[in-house]
Image (tube, rainbow, N blue to C red; front, top):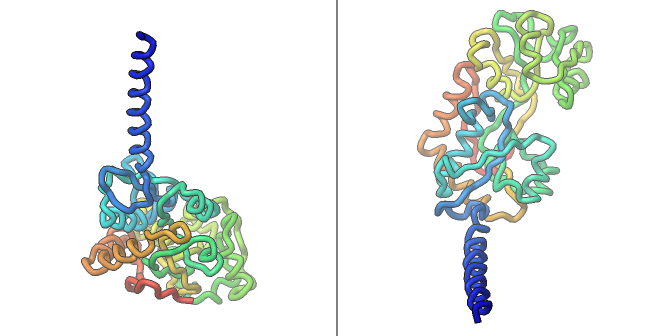
Length: 277
């Protein structure tokens, strides 16, 4: 008899635990509502001005956009879990459900759109060059002939310039964009190339303010979108949030806050679905 009572009590405890577990399994539900739940967002952790992990938290334009979107989806800032999304991992992270969405200088391309869906675009960037503020000889891409151009491992930007625009450019290998900046400052290299938004983020750092400028060449169109899992209903909700961010001028404020010190001549906020080729 005593054994039967213990078993019944155990069963009740087990049932209660299972109920609690079932409720807890919805902590991350793809962002459909914010009633005390969490949302996981992928960003870059190492791109100043866009997505950077700092001792004080996370900051950058992508972070501001993602935070605004999350709030419109019903989440407070403390309900956001930030996860590093390196370029090579983004599609896999979305497909596995590691994140609800990704805002990480994620250019919309036909190849990527076969694997994931994109909301946006929310920023139109261009490949450009960063040069010293007092540089007066590099006024066009062709002027990069014979110039020392920073080439970063894993990036094709510098090679594209050499192949298509300045065949005599001297590619100088560096491990990261951050490593290029001291060389650019002291004259070891003449120019650094990648997306203008990324370059502006680096140039806007306090230690580099006033020392660099963008060439303004607009060599390519890079349509930054917010990636979601294929077929996710988040796409339409995020698009609505992005439209609201532009309408209430929060988008303009985020641009100024993150790129202003670099005098970044940004494009106007793109219309949803307007992907420039």
